[in-house]
Length: 280
Image (tube, rainbow, N blue to C red; front, top):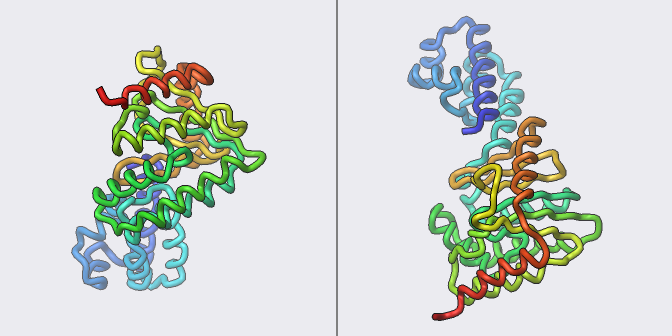
C-alpha cells in the first residue's frame, strides 16, 4: 500500500474519531449504535481498514453529524483516486478502463513511459492486445468484453498521430522476448514496434540486456506532463500526484534512459528478437 494512501486513511480515521468524541461517545457506544463490532470502529479510526461510503454515512448519522457526511465521502474519493483496485475497476469488463486511458492521453501533451515486461498499449497490435486482455480477464475473473476492450485500446493509439504530442517510451529488452501470445502474433507486434521508430511524435528507446545501469528496472510506470504518475501493479492501479513522487519517477526514467539505445541500435534489438521467433 502506498505511503500517501495510508497517510490519507489515517487522516480520515482521525476525523472519524473527532466526530465520535464530539458526540460524547466512546468506541463501544458508537459500535452499539451502529450494530458493529467495537473492533471495526477501532480499525477505521486507526487507519487499519478503509471505510465504505455506507460506513461513513452511518458514522455521521450515529454521531449526530449528518452535515459532515459529504466531507467524509470527499476524503474517501481522494483516497480512491490514489489507489484503485483492478478487481473493482474490471468488475464490468476492460472496456471502461481502456476508455479512461483514451481521455487521459488526450488531456496530456508529453508522456514518458517505461515498461519492463510488455509492449505498451499505445504500440500494441489488435491481436497482441487481445491475448493480453484475455489473460488478464482470466486472472482477475472479470467479464470478457475483449472485442470492445481491444477497440478502445486501438482508439487510444490515435493520439500518436495528433499534432503537438510527444511520447518518450523506454522498453526493457526482455519485453521484446516475452511470449505472451503465439509466435506469429509476436512477430507482427515486433514489426509494428520497428515501424514506429522514426515517427515524429514517438521517441522509442530500448534498454539492452547487459547494459550498464544505475538502478534495477523494477515495474513499469507512466508520467503525464510531469504532473501525475500512473503505476500498474498486479492488484492495483496507483496514481501519484505529489511533487516528490513525480520528481522521483522522473529521476528513475532519466537514469534508465541513460542506458537506452535509439534509432538503428534499437531497430537491431527488435530485429534480433524478431529473428529468434523463426522456427529452428
